Length: 530
Image (cartoon, rainbow, N blue to C red; front, side):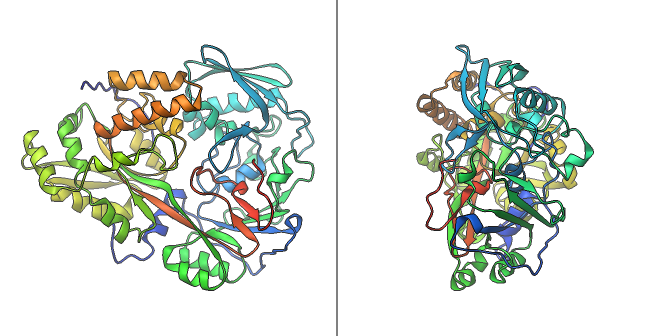
């Protein structure tokens, strides 16, 4: 196998005694924030039109500027305020959103979107092609997660009020999925560049932000628009979203009636069930992955040897970590992709059994009988896991030094190319988006821009294949390539448990990990496709 690499950018322990470990890690993954609650009870009635969804989340929205949106549980707030061009349902399937239809050119380098008629921003201004173009152009010129996701976009055109044409530098099969998330939001051209938008946005989504009742960083109150085109997908007249990062405080808010839905730590499940809450378990919402980024051995020579990368994969007793660290709320894995996705292959989880002796033998064969040393970034979401990763690698002879990185420098530190190996706790995404991020030469998690002739061919096929049935097979081949060539050392998925009060239902099963109010329904009603 031949691997080339050139420096450039991308992005982004189990301590058995820690009862709140999984919750703490998930909170760190999604963001740090100040816990908040008040004495106002959450209202619930049998009538969907009068029901209030009172939801707790782990992360504070950083901004409502369309170009600066970040994903995670913050999405529950901004996805309620803004329309996206496409919609992703709870099974991960794409449906019309603000774009009623779309089509690609034969060469896959032009995507034409036909917009829905009659949409309006909360200000009363019409939503048209110029608004879509202005938002996308601003996103493309503004540093942020969405800008990084849209690297394949060359230009955006609005030939008429209801038509948008996105021209691409090369085919990009991840684009449609991206347009159902932050890169696909539509901002109001008259206000989206204003400083006030960061806290007081103008959107065309199903809800408006009640700025009088909202306390930034603490509670966000959303009022449903009666004139919204897809109102049936949002049965809650009012949504009250509280930022509560502490798992005990979150459980207490549920028990006190201050919230009626939220994720719950495993240690709180029995008490919540006894209090009458329904618990819905999702096996995988994020993954803990050790990225073996320097696959050409530029900064750390051992990683250029496949035997070394395989040895790293054999160092982890994955099932034990799930059982003891996550307390069963997760799943051991040797692969990157969502277990609900089409790229996932259960057979690949047998490639790297836990085998310390075998790992040491591979290291010796590669010329490292005494192992080697590596420095990795200590990030806000890796800290709880660092001791057990350190021990597992030390057991096969690899000494890890963790270098502290301030939270605000996480993205730049990982992308710098300074660290040949690094750990990510990463929210799962669609097969196309995960492939682009971790395997494409321009992916912001492929830090050293590694390439391989076989992989290049598979990526080209995947980018050009617009038939989801045919593309599924290609993504499975990419998955197999990544596992067999040990581009990463995936260790486990983190699960989540949703607690909902009687009358509220959680509709997700992990097929889509996008955080949207459409994941919640009113008991007894039929969920909308959107």
